Image (cartoon, rainbow, N blue to C red; front, top):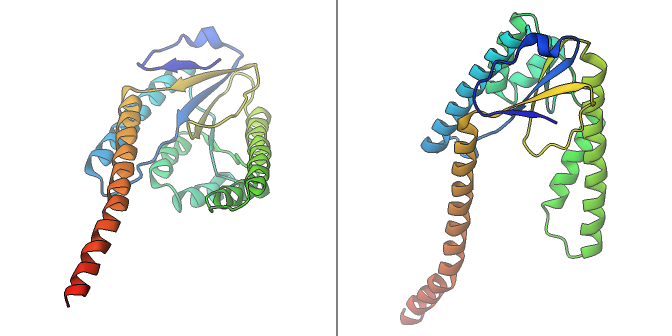
Length: 229
C-alpha cells in the first residue's frame, strides 16, 4: 500500500534497508495555457512536488531510476522524446539524471499506440451500442496490458535497496510488486489543483449549456430580421 505524503516526512533510511522504494508522482497538466489561475496552481504543484521528492531522495539514500508514462525508450533518446511533449517533466528529469539517476523505458510502443487509438475511437459518437460496448472492452484489455507492462519494466530494472521515481497520471491502474515500498507524493497544492480543475470543468459545462440554449433565440431573432427585410 502506498504511503501518502501530504507533508514532507523524512523516513529513516535504515527502516527500508534492502527494500526497493518507488516515489509515485501524480502527473498533472493544465487544460488552458492562457488560464492565469490554472497556471499558478500548476506551478505551485510542481514546485512543492519537487521539494518533497528532493527531501525523500535525501532520506532514502538517493535516486537510481526514473520512469515516465508514455516513454517507450530510455536514456538520451527518451530525454529527447520527453523534451518534445512535456517540458516541465523534461527539465525536472534532466536534473535528476545529471545527479546519476537513469531514465528507463516505461511503456511498450505497440500497446501504448493501441490504447491511444482506442481512446480516440471512443470519443466519436457511435450509432451502435454494441460497437460502443466492444470498444470499451477492447480499451479495458489494452489498458490492462499497458499497466502490466509498466509494472514489469519497473520490476525488472529496480534493484534491491534502490529507489525509483514514477511520473504517471492519477488515474493509472498499475499494480506494483508487493516487495516495492511505494511513497505517494501528495503536496498540498495537489488538492488545490483538483479543486481548481473541478471548478474549471463546471465553468466549461455551464458555458457550453448557455451557448446551446442561446442558439434557438438567436435563430429566431435572425428569422424576424429577415422577415422584416
